[in-house]
Length: 239
Ligand SMILES: *Cc1c(COP(=O)(O)O)cnc(C)c1O
Image 1 (cartoon, helix red, strand yellow):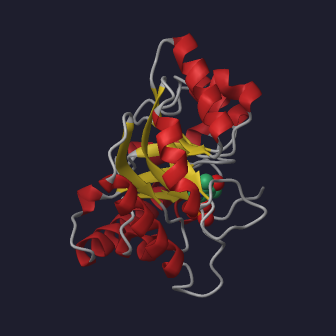
Image 2 (image 1 turned 180 degrees about the horizontal axis):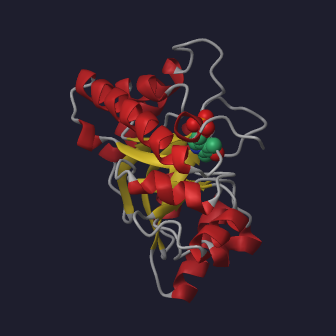
């Protein structure tokens, strides 16, 4: 998206519509619009556009995929209005730029990464909130734990000090036909509810982060309380 005088109007109209659909889906699933958090997936967007989007007051969190972009945007003060989350695949050698700088790391996809995040958090003197990323469709191209393994993963991450698990995140396959991802969303909701029922230290199943531009309505119907939306807010990405 290009930054010009129209950008603010376009962003504000798109966000108004998105918020209406979020409210509608939340209502249909027995909740209110305040029960679903909107994360703006900001990858490839310049700081000025991010600031403009956040200025609408309709976005709860910014979500960054790439460490380099996160650093640039932090330097530019792009997220002064809302906290930022990290939502992309993380390499351990870049953790110092992320841990303690973001409110939530949504994309912890291995025990090793969880341990490294914890180490970095202790070094920085903070406790880092994280979500565990699940590879719900078992796609080879994607990172994340298999949902079947969550039962063995939770007691393990529970013992690591320096992190709090706040929920789960998943990126189901790109939807080709409407409604296609509903079985995955249902599965994730079940896993979320089951894990919530088990009590482990430092594990709080608060967030079920699922749903993107093409399928957030269905995701909310299936129990999502955090949607990550890029294209529907900023338009089609060049890169
Ligand atoms: C890019 C991205 C999104 C948003 O995708 P859109 O289809 O543009 O809404 C959500 N989550 C993650 C992890 C992403 O990388």
